[in-house]
Length: 395
Image (tube, rainbow, N blue to C red; front, side, top):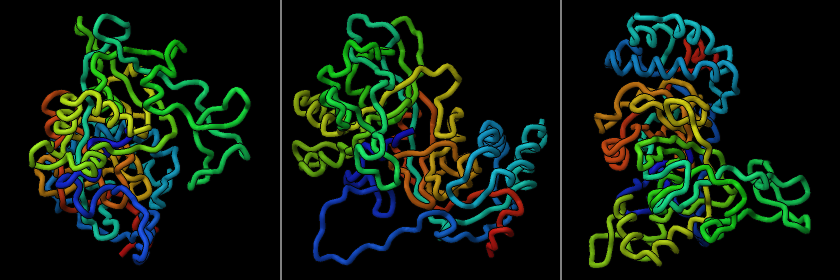
């Protein structure tokens, strides 16, 4: 996943609370420097949470979380945990038990093999994302003219010495020009104008460029052809150019609000503006220079950052610096739908910081409504294998 709805709506008034999600940054002078946030869960502070037997866990909720945990286990026991909390071997006992659990109480499984941890103050903010479903298919036909591109072979990372490294030490993405110099890759406006046409990268065609723009924001989706055939596509990569939340651009232009000529600061409001002003709307979307490439998926669900399917009501996106990907998460929020057990199986460009989550709601009209309206506050607990907190010296 590359963002979720929050990324589209970034900086829209009334959508992003002051303590959650990224904000547009502007040069500032004469202001005190802001404290640097802790870089992982250990730096943020880890404390013991309450006994899991004291938490309300519904049987169906725990059963769904157990099924998703099983799917995550092959990754959990093999990958490095960027949060600094766990080691691959910490998960082996719980994963072995999960594979053999059978018809036993799923809530008992979690209380038997896990203990709760609170990262920082535990105060949480959660949004929602979903799997869009739009008109599209694998073959071009009348009315289906917007191409969906696979990841291009000429989109590469610069060789050392050909460009400045990124802040994380990696070399930037881009392309090599015919003269051998490294340059940025084609941006949204250039791709819209046909920069990739005729290169054999088309894997599908869709009917509506606006719906496709928002599918790119979500990072995966379903294409439904006129004959009812469904093709699932998932994130394959991005062009290396920065993401710009067009909701923030609309706000800066005075287009967001309740006055004459203004639009709601929501996905639906942005879509309404773009459709009512097609020329200005296309220019607005092209302010977001980032472009997402896709691949056809053959499984029964969109793939998250762990490369396993994300499941409606069970999977949550988190910042892997603070939550081990694959770990269970318990949310106690002021939005009832978001309460209970989730499994951290995804990440997102707007999902940054301790206790920041993006809940996944599946596909369809109801999923779109739930995800688009999800904005919950409360508290979060990370479930870690028993013994980890003792090893970390948590109190």
